[in-house]
Image 1: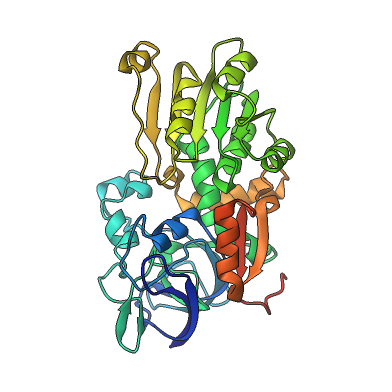
Image 2: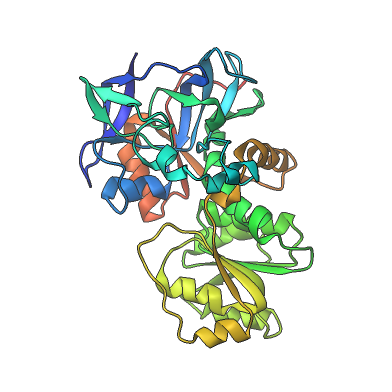
Length: 372
């Protein structure tokens, strides 16, 4: 089947939308999905410019939403016409998957970041030549084929154009708080970086009952949005030292939890240094930067912990519906971070994401789609 897709030909190249891409045939547990929209994530940009690689040429995108067109013979729980959000793939059979932690699937990298389908075959080709995929999904396409484990069914009355980023950015930020840090009511949290992931983490802290939910950024407009979405305090780290400010807001103790979404060395260190005794810092950005502790003893004697978190330790089929319920209640207004772009304007959308002009660009791939 010929489809339209945005292709990155070589490392650092812009996206080129092509009409002659061949989509693989479905397997027995696969779904064919007509894409409605896709968020753009900083991970897409990292691969486009070569900070990470799946091999080139490549079709990126991993925050897709769409409508099921076909189902494989062994598919369970999905029918033609279902609305779905797409996320990562896990096999469901390894020990970590069976423990309920699919983000730690023993073959996570093979299934999501190898550039080929889970069975090792090409997902996309052009004139018979291999094109790498992403997350067994590649949502910068008019159509894709995914395994049923990539998909989460969602209510048809919801606007599919808004929902794709729930499969990565929003579930990563919120899941880091809900699934990994697990704050108790009355505890405190600070989030460094108020992009989509950071704002999701911040809203999750508010929902969890944290009495202080502190947003840290250098962009005043983002801090204003953070306040609107539930931050109890905001700190512009261009204007004041965030560690000092956080200590001032917490009687000199620091916060119980921090989340760094920036991946910037001095900011990651600030996230650690802003912790109270016994606090935990979650560093969740994909970054090439390293951090050097000035004193390991400070970490040990203060009983501070530093953790990495992949995809919010999420089970998409559980976490995405949970976020949608919070959205319906008006306490997880993720769509306030989004801006829609036409598929043809993908390079402008990506540039606006990189510059910070837009928090969460969403490509509208099917411009004829109308919410029910």
